[in-house]
Length: 444
Length: 146
Image 1 (cartoon, chains in turn orange, cyan):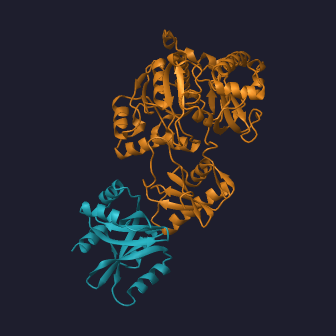
Image 2 (image 1 turned 60 degrees about the vertical axis):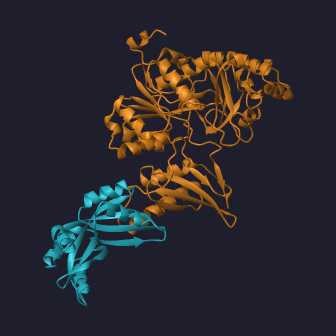
Image 3 (image 1 turned 120 degrees about the horizontal axis):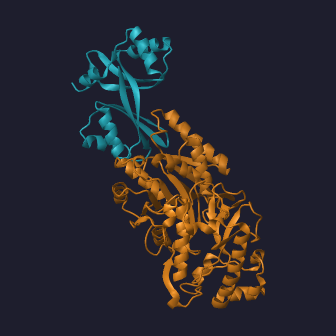
């Protein structure tokens, strides 16, 4: 692709064009693609044909975008049941790439890409990087894991297509990450937000101040995180911390991204059609109401998914974005219906605990929620690492801190919660996704 | 005339006290005196050492949370009623004591106590006015290591 656009002073990559489509044209494009994809899924994938036939729905039934509600949902278990290749809509000789999710519960789920799928993936990642203020000339440290996980290669192809310089360092080896960031003049990093916090802590120990390095942006995804974490990261590293969203079933990273406004994530909805549904009843909710996010892939060849339930809880932001993009935004996802735990009949999300800790302490400490069962009764405890900022030589002051944290969490979740202060670095740091909840109820 | 005291957060569990002590031992830092406050869940170890800045760095490197507080060391007559007399002076001067602990050594007929005052500067002024002998850092370290 010619790169004259940089010289012309364009603020965004031309690939970002669809982000600014007039809504009417966008809806036409979506309907056109939806009709094609439903046909493709129905004709090539047995599961979709069976499900639609059961409901007596033919592909021709989709005459408007609203008609999508007639189609059956797809869930994670469908992918597991079809292991490994049961949902592919392309013959294997057209599949150029396979990825797989970590099989934390049983078998992994396998996803496939044709060459066109890989190209679309790179284009949505270009749009992601552009929305996060990156362009040609940027030096991007890609600390997402390379391999079966989609994060590494997804960000890699996107950053290259953008015209940036990519450092394919992959995850792990924190000291080397810090050395490379410093010596190579890295301007943006891709990794999970919890790994970046780990990196910040290690850099401080090594006497490296990220504020003095050229790094200006963090492209953080692959796990739910909150504004509380952003409030900690941004001033400490003097970067803009952007939230990106994706899941391997839909394509990988590049499904949605924040822009410079950092208020919600724009969905690249010319490729991924979003709906918000009531997770209990499955009905489509009016715009703005909170519910489960559902995607239909509009252009995926190798593995189209119809109405895939993400388990992520969010809502559409109905106001227009100040950045000018017209594709719809979702509120940043800080909770998954999977993360939710139920204790004594109360639904609790780790994000609620996080918000309470932030409010009580001013900064977000490392914490872990521990669920246990004592004589048949569920107990919730929160371990919080003591930081130098809040530690005092006076027993009363430390005890007051403990109680105020306890009260703040109890107030938010409506349950008695035992807060236990622990020494720094005693809560396990993950290299990938943060483990916020330790459920030991099954063990007792 | 104020002395720097280091406080270390400890979980109230077996073996937690030995980590900071071993770290200081390895660096050849002598603990002049200490006190340990504890609750059911956690404890606070308070230390007086000669080179508090080095000790703080070593403790932090070993993973401890460290807090620095200014405390005051005063002489107390080592006989019945010695402490009571001193406390009376403080009470009369409206000095609020957060906590206190003693040094293990004796100097002539006097003991030395560490006081953590709510307002160390105001306390110092009152003590000096009342003629209480406040022991400064240099003098204190010399006595402790004599």
